[in-house]
Length: 108
Image (cartoon, rainbow, N blue to C red; front, side, top):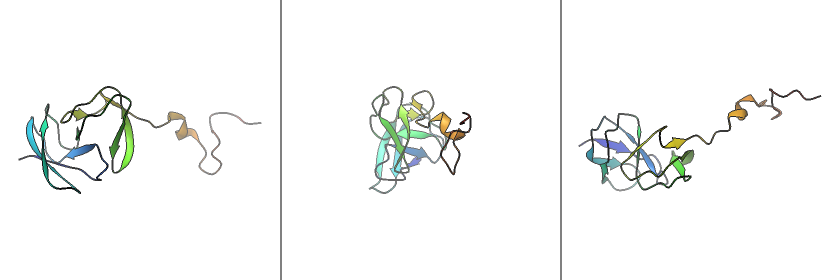
């Protein structure tokens, strides 16, 4: 049986440890082993929803928020760019590490 791995007990997604075409897969991680039903094919390394995630709800992996559902996601559904968006502030990449000031806006 194909396996996915939940890293932290608070995660609502798990990572596929092999390609799976659908059907029952084994969930391993910090809790007792369970079986979940894939709704679609999901490839190695991609995320699968462990529970229903509502639109706007955080997507949690490693025990931290890695994104936000852009639409409702069902248990066993592939979680990727088509139904999840980043919560990273794009401008934060332009902040000075020492001062926190924006490097793309001149301060006089």
